[in-house]
Image (cartoon, rainbow, N blue to C red; front, side):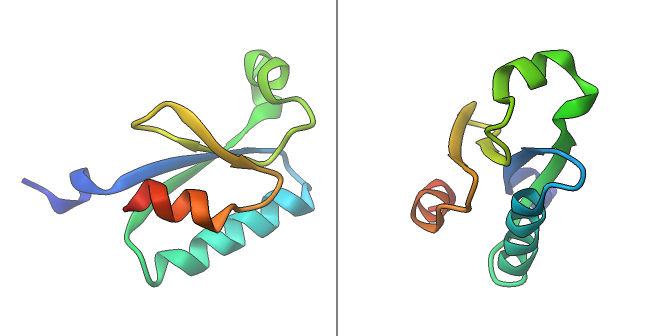
Length: 85
């Protein structure tokens, strides 16, 4: 079995040119140097449903396995660490 399949996965729902989105992505990339997890960035402006769902509430960090929002606007380290534990 590939160990990559066991990695926790999160999605960052965000927008192009959003400084809060860029900050969250940078924080996650920094954390990836210490903790193994996967994340994907999805631009909500490419999907009308995501625009309706998240609107101005970006970035949103979404836990893929649990199908739930972990935090928005800023990386909530406590919630993220609990998700990874």
